[in-house]
Amino acid sequence: MPHASHAHHSDYADRGERSLSSALPADSDPPGRPGPRRTPSGVTSITSAAKRTPHPHLRPVEDFDRHANQVAVDTSAAADVPAPAPRVLQRLALYAFEALEGVRSVGQLAAWITPRVADALHERRAARTERRTLYCDDRLVVATPGPVHIDRPVPHVIEAAVSLYAEPRTHPVAMRLEYRDRRWRITELVVM
Image 1 (cartoon, rainbow, N blue to C red):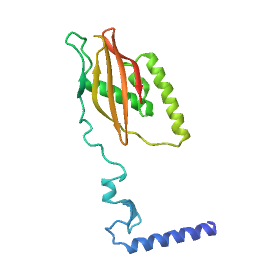
Image 2: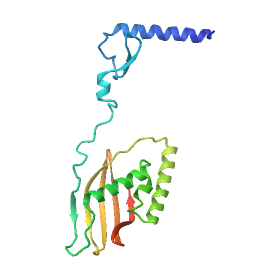
Image 3: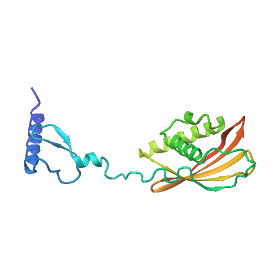
């Protein structure tokens, strides 16, 4: 037999639901945020407004590829070793940022980074994770890469900078890539 106070509570909740659902027409949304509501059959349904905007406080990213493959500055000479495509540099900056945020594994960058850079990324990721845990910060930061700035101090070295736009902040990423064994590898990486 159910506990008396529990039975009283469920009766009260049923009466509250019935009075709310009877006060509104069947096809209208309740006042406030759109969301689940009870139909006359008692089955929970999602309103059409909630399907369109599941998170009204979030905005869709406009023109994600607006700066894709764009170079703001490039000091390369014709005799230099060809640099990776600007889109590759943008993606490397974005993936490094995502690795620090905990969204992506550092191992996914292994082909492009040196072991020393991987160790530094692991350390910074652990520090950020600890900070987020202490401050109960569970936000997911989504960034969009901006144009690439490329500097060539010597023919086999690239120093690249990419701004990652994540409202309300912009995170600069600086990379130094060196051409070794017929491929480019990141030897220095700073994500702010």
